[in-house]
Image 1 (cartoon, rainbow, N blue to C red):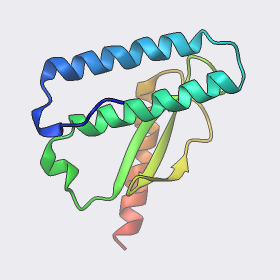
Image 2 (cartoon, helix red, strand yellow):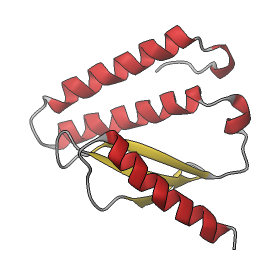
Image 3 (cartoon, rainbow, N blue to C red):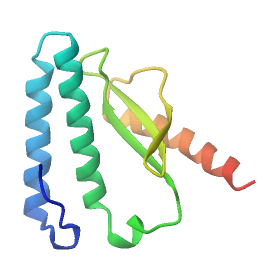
Length: 122
């Protein structure tokens, strides 16, 4: 496991972590369908979420906003993406469909996140 020292992370270290996650994802996608592939993709998703958390400025990490939007590779359709909304780190909503690109998934998830934030302010 990689130790987390968020305040001291350098840009180079973050780039190395991102490259490692991309390489892991590429390797996992080559695995045959099944439980091992699913487990590998789940582990990589967690790794990518930790990288994203490390990249946030410290003032954002302490933000009162409890919601996070996370995009991840689809575990059903290789090469496609899904999004998850989390409240205080716990999953509360996921995309029903998969998207061709990570950007499309993020955009759709962002729309749902904005609706959720508006409702929570009522």
